[in-house]
Length: 376
Image (cartoon, rainbow, N blue to C red; front, side):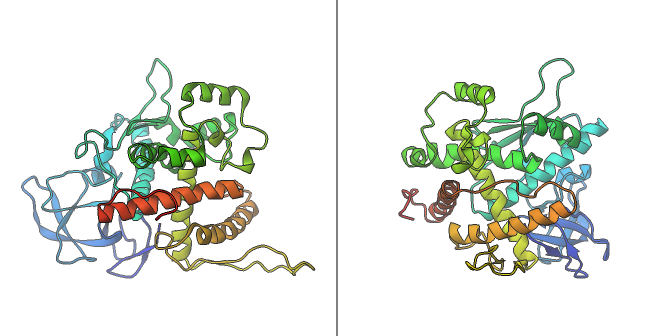
């Protein structure tokens, strides 16, 4: 994620802003430009009565707001000539809760915020993000479901491109209860969707792209019974030495979960590093050198993590940033920003995800098949 600036007054803006408090302009996000723009009314309206806007970031264009803007759940823009009523992210919504219930509306808005950030990152990575209308056989859709009055609670999960999201998880108290019950160090809405979409891209970029064997060489044999593996994990927990090779305890449950957890961490890393670069963050620990010359590592985050950069440089900057951020959080009595330890094998798995994503982007541009690991 990055910072934005109002084109009318130069006020600093953030991704979810819908109005500039200085210039009072309505704001809209232009996904094709990765730009948040101040808007001015065009003075014309469509046949259906929708207001048309002139984005100051592209004055010659005419746009309208996504239909979910009326729920204050989206600030993305659609070209005026488009027949679509929903933006590129909201078109992935298949099921929404009853929004006439105020509590549902507030919770759904929080899920929507996470989904918009997710799609931003996927698009910045150059990944295809098909919806179920344009790609009925493999499109990505989200069902945000409230718990039924009588019956089992909704569980977040993935099934062949259909991602179910439990509306109740948007309640901080409920999510914290689940986090502590399950012994997790980290549980957020954005973390959920990044993990679940990892399963989706395993289907697209590994299974359907003929990369099963090379992926198994990194993450293990995914042909083992998934249901039985989860039962064993919940019954016995993770191995005592899990941090030696996995990004999280849950990643030990099954190779599919290892891939999805590693995928989510990769998205955490590139998105946070982009924001750190936007703030020009440098980490220079001021500690006296030891006789051996060792100390905390430094970082100068002045690069685009989505650009032509290797996993080594990403990690070399990520680790010092998390050391600093975790220490700052502790000064406020808050939990660590990144409560994980990355071992060399876990970093190697992140390197595989990095290669997979970058090679997929090249394949999409060139029309060639994905290359085996080590050739791209």
